[in-house]
Length: 297
Image (cartoon, rainbow, N blue to C red; front, side, top):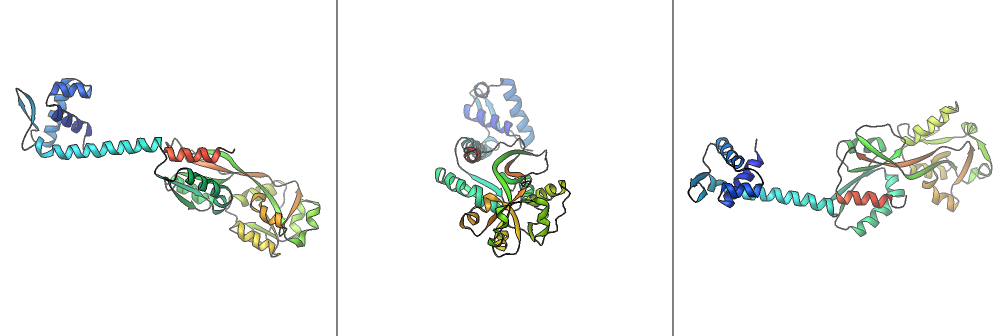
């Protein structure tokens, strides 16, 4: 295995031409410098220096043969360290953001555009998937930060920062349910109507099922789907009553194509949370993006 410290000592001795001067530059003792040179020579099986009355001179077959390569290698390592330092202090590099299509559309899109305008040198990769899949990608180092629907199970490998965005789940119908929207309906009576719900493996559906189970209400949906846009379209077309965050149905509620059906009790409030790998040391660009996301909360 390559011992970089030995090569740094070799390079410093070659530059200084003296064990004493090299020891001063490296802030170690002269015997330690001498021992490092001997160790590297034994490792390589060749003499690197000629010891003369003038000091240390590179040997023709050993030291001179590798000096330029060692200098170039140490230079590349120095550039790498400088680049990492720059990333920690300036907004450069790439940020990989994981979230669902809906979270990107309704929560992150404007913030990403504004962040890019402020930090154009940062490349942004958007990784869209359902919350469970995004969590796995974060753990597999396929994204740097994840925005997920809550609640989720506690994971010791991740750090959760909650309440980036509140989600107020409501029941929605089309204009045919306008009369129903003018009253408050006991939630148990929703069983009488065709219900369109998200797929069972989604966070939104699990939250809904847990809520209904707490009242002993068993729901048999007419239809199960995988996306909010499809749900809104089906509801507008009269296929049934949907369950969706009010924030995602705002436009339809405003233009009258959707109506809100109020219930007693109301559905519980959920939220979007941010996940990071535990003990992660993010780049300056990532930290700046996170601060930008949270500045309005």
